[in-house]
Amino acid sequence: MAEPEEKPEFPKKGNQGEEKPITDKISSRFEELKKDKNLQKVYNFTKTNTKDTIAYIAIFIGILLLFFQPFWGGVIIGAVGGFYFADTIIHWLRNFKDYLEEEGTVKAVIVLGVALGFLIGATSFFLGAAAAVGIKFILFGESKTK
Image 1: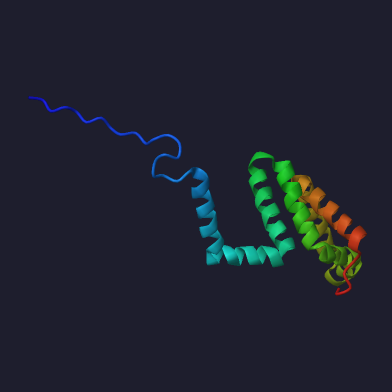
Image 2 (image 1 turned 45 degrees about the horizontal axis):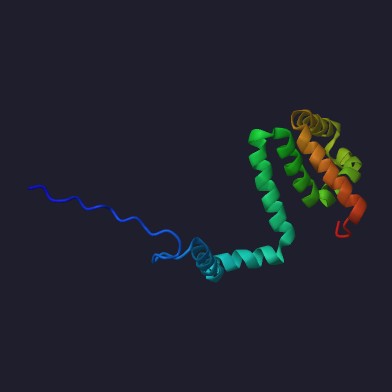
């Protein structure tokens, strides 16, 4: 004789079963993550180094955008680079005449040719960097450390 087949039991709907509701699961997981030491280190770093954290996120977004929207990815990366190196760029531009005298005309022409090539090849990067350098210089002025 054939044995009767057992019907599978389905979990009960609502909170009648033994399982916790999804909100309790999420809350308990969130509490566990709050206690994690590595996440605490990351949180403390972001809290004390806000400018760097924003730059890391912007660079990451810019690199991702380079694959899908190269113009905007270049603008973001150029802006972060321009913001971080604004003082160095301004110092180098102001002292280009001294560089020209030290290194000679040939090297100066080559540097300008390479810069022009980058400007043509990576216009968005240069636009972002120039905008960031200009805005930083207008708002904060040149650093006194140079």
